[in-house]
Image (spheres, helix red, strand yellow):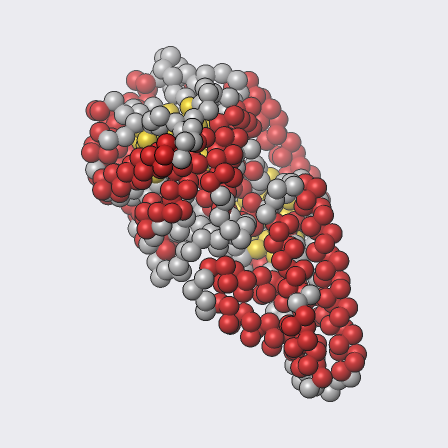
Amino acid sequence: MLQGIAVSDGIGLGKVLLIRAHALVFNENRAVDPQHETGRFTKAVAAFCANTASRMRHLQQRSPSSEDSKILETHIGIANDPEMNSQVCELIESGLSAEGALNRVCNMYIAMFSDSHDELTRLRAEDIRDVRNALMHLLLGVKDTAIKDAPKGSILVAEELSPSAMADLDTERIVGLVLEKGGPASHASILARTMGLPAVCGVRGAADKLSSGDFVIVDGSRGEVISSPGEKVIAEYWQKREAQLEERRCMEHFRDRHTISADGLEYPLYCNISMPCAAGGAIESGGEGVGLFRTEYLFMNRSSPPSEEEQATAYSQALDGAAGRQVVIRTLDIGGDKNVPCLDVYKEENPFLGLRGVRWCLQNPDVFLTQLRALLRAGAGEGRDLRVMFPMISSLAELRACRQLLEKAREQLINDGKACAGSLPVGVMIETPSAAFIADHLSRETAFMSIGTNDLVGYIMACDRGNPSVSSLYDPFHPAVLRALRHIIQCGSATGTPVCVCGETASDPRLVPLYMSYGIASFSIPSGAVPRVRKTVSLWTKAEADSLSEAAGRLETAREVRELLDSAARM
Ligand code: PEP
Ligand code: MG
């Protein structure tokens, strides 16, 4: 059995699909028949173009406006580029193998384009790299394992998966996820939870220990990967899986209700979404609105950022999906582990302490203004409850600068004669220690605050939220974290500014009563967690939650707090 970190509940049974970058081994200078080599190259190009064109047709049928099909069109253009192809053929004539010639020509263009200051040219280098790799696979007869083409019942095993690769994942085909890197708050884990996909992270050496086709069991609740299970174990896990699904069905009872504590206090449950089309699903799952729309996902998997028009349509779609309920749209939060190739995000030594969230946006006001204009336009529609939230705030100056740009966006729209929202409620994410310490000031200048515990825990504990080596330090039960949360929520209560928790800890049944006791106004959680958290809230009175939080507040270590909350948990 392989042990990792439990990051997304549920049990998945299936066959391993190993996603690994192949080492492409070939002989550059072999004694060859140039005609034969040219024929191999031409055949590989033809096969590549035929495969790509068919993928393109498939994509266009599935989502006609998808940017992916444009990328594929570019790839076909690169493979057929007459200049490049004649250079490859020349090198073949001079005695190189088809692989060697292709590699040399592509590497020359990649090196040339990668150094460019122009972002689109740099992207071109990425495209050439993709095409080169695909052609190499064809020439060498290496089968590429594409996530999109995964057979039904696959368990994906990889070193790590980028958020954009995760966004491509089809849960009809993939039933579990095992990653060597990452932790509970890494974006791959968050997306796995959103998709209801059982997942285990931080499984060291998984890609070496498991092979494609192995039958494995992923227990996302215990962080275990069981390889080559015997029949008895398989039967046992099918049963466990059934029991879990049954429990989920029972929870249905809590789906369409308000979220009321045992003594009648209301704690609305909002949902975290990454795509506009998920807003409707969040409401169907029993969410009372959207508490966090992570807009950076609109910028992924494409070669240029979405236009103002496209963004306004996306935000309107989310607002329409929420049917008049509140939708908190968070402005672009890139940087850290969220890389967005279509934007000019420089590789930094220490990305989590670098240009993240509003820091990047304030230095790139054109991109920011486009988003703010789109938000104001979307907010203008009848009966819409749109709120804007700024991420990674660490000073009042940043909040004020963001507000000024929001005002500027409004003035621009008015001058352009475009309809725009009058004034939108503005809030901030509290996810840096500095924001936590000045929560009293921030609360006076905002309509709401939302605690991003995923980042806040990492920054308070000074450990990377995605690094398995320090995952034991990344602890939301640590007294320092609990003190920070209590302080922030109390600052909000003192000025009447509602505070929400939107990090993953908001759906932990052990922490929910503590947050209730601190005076939290609402929770924002993955839509799949709504029934469970609603039930937990219903099992506590404020007085009971207060006595638990008093006891927890007297404890000195994270372990003691965890033990207390484990024993007190009601589910
Ligand atoms: C957080 O930090 O808790 C949060 C919700 O933001 P993200 O996970 O998108 O960084
Ligand atoms: Mg965050």
